[in-house]
Length: 105
Image 1: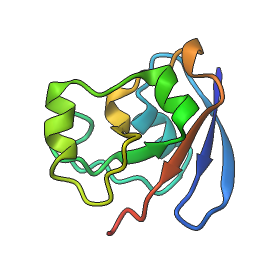
Image 2: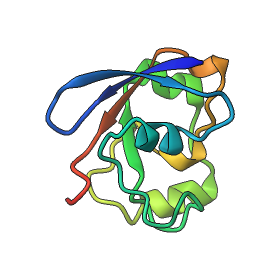
Image 3: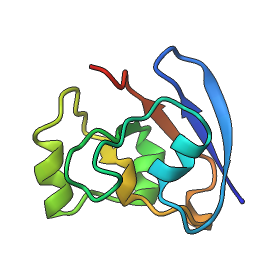
């Protein structure tokens, strides 16, 4: 199991244990936290948009060209925004810090 630290839209902090092999989107949703993923994780909608702190962003790296194209259509994008469906849960993301935005913005 890998631990991630998730800040929900209300500012509450949650420690989430994630199974290796899931996407970050799946892990967050399975933890019952408010993250939309309208397309089911196929990188077609951008509703699983998250914001990482700078250290966490450095761990997962920059988005690829296709992901950047989707992020260009999303509101509230920051320099450390990613689509959670594109981040694989593995040991390298232990203690990743994730901020969820209002899923209905």
